[in-house]
Length: 79
Image (cartoon, rainbow, N blue to C red):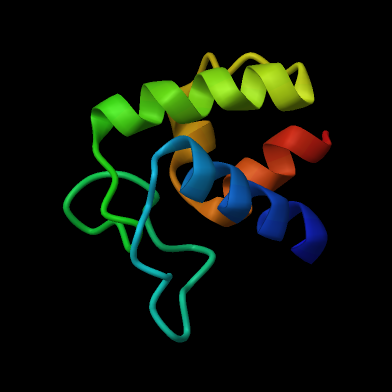
């Protein structure tokens, strides 16, 4: 699962042009989007990430809860 999570971090960083590295001790259960996002991502970024996931993993994100955290998103793409 950690490999998939790292792939997703790379996908998010590349897709959303995240310039700052993730904070030390980043929590895989932290929100991916919104004011508490450790990536600094907003709702427009969520759309871009959903499209990138569909292209890379051939999985359509139809439930926004799937993208609530890195851990949940990794479970989604591996199932």
